[in-house]
Length: 436
Ligand code: B12
Ligand code: SF4
Image (tube, rainbow, N blue to C red; front, side, top):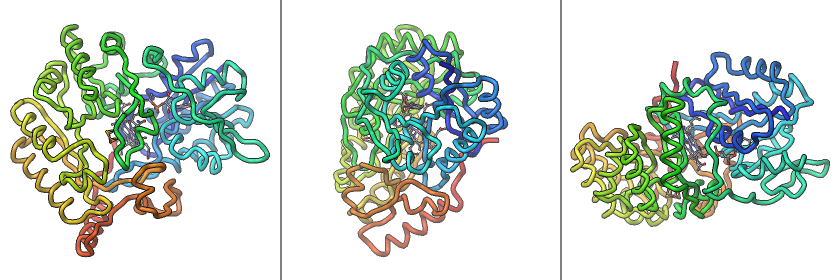
């Protein structure tokens, strides 16, 4: 079959993220004729998509809805709106092509999106490494799990899909992607690589455990290094971003990867999401020798109460220890994200975050690369959402703003006023993630 895999158009020009999910899916369906198209790297995103359809004449179009919105209060933008538009454009050129949707954004709101987008014939939620090939093999839904489909009686789901084991995870088909276009943006994490899937932690606001599961599936460090080597030698990639929910847990897996990268003499730069609780001096040394130049941390709160409410593994002690370790490694850079408002907290949460950031600035100077006081974008099926007990329609539509999706309340009325001012100043004057 001729299958065209399309990354959804974001609706504005941002630093691109190479379509990792689509390149992985393509590697599982090698017995089909597959093309990948990313409108986000094209000068004329919609036109180029329609031309690609015209030329390739696909029987199936698989469209990846990765992002719903920016989730950033200081750069609010609705991508979902543009997904709906691109679906309409695709449908307008041919209503015979089967349209299949999937991706992280789709997986957060599968039934809502199926309802709002009648152009989608079938939707795959969560991981589709096994379900998508099975669907193609069986020529339809049959007994395949992980599918949303519609018939005259409504929209139905076949249940949670089976998740792939680490040893069956394949190298993405980067040969179908023009990776050269993403290489200038590797400093902005444009080329992703997975060393594992799953997160065993259960932070109250986070969607990663629902998207990638609670069970850790780790690739062998030898496989990781040989795949990164391939990325570097075959595609000239100089820097990768580990898409793992937490790279340095389990610590031993991360340390072995670092040792293997160094032993292989692989000169590659990389960065990743880190959890401060598992940071040790040895790890930072190993990671830096192996090419990590920036450590991202999202402790989210710097006071015990906030950390407890958010269900974080971090503690005040682990945060301070991490800061100290980074300080003594003179080339190490780090960034820290905190939430200005955490449900059930007030001044203490905010002031402890500000005081930690000031301390970090004094200790690290310019090596503190990013520091943020942001707001939680409420996401579906999270513990936090259940706790705040408010009904909020979390899928943005074009008629209402995105501000209502963020949590910006505290236990103090005075602080609430300040938070509202801070929130709106950020919303109006924040930096937009746009490139020329
Ligand atoms: C790593 C990561 C990043 C890295 C990406 C590095 C890179 N170059 O790849 C960086 C830091 C750059 C990043 C940036 C952003 N990210 Co991000 N990111 C992630 C993360 C953790 C993993 C994504 C990933 O690559 N996973 C591995 C691949 C293999 O999985 P996948 O893409 O989901 O694909 C699988 C399935 O979804 C499915 N599938 C995918 N497409 C399709 C299509 C079809 C047809 C089918 C059948 C199946 C299918 O099959 C694939 C294989 O199983 C996810 C959360 C998560 N755990 O999933 C958030 C996530 C995708 N990001 C998110 C967001 C918001 C963003 C940003 C918009 C943030 C911002 N304001 O800048 C940007 C957008 C960047 C861009 N240009 O698109 C949100 C999106 C949800 C939402 N509310 O909008 C997520 C879900 C996190 C969250 N908050 O919940 N991100
Ligand atoms: S915030 Fe990080 S550690 Fe917590 S559940 Fe999400 S991915 Fe896991």
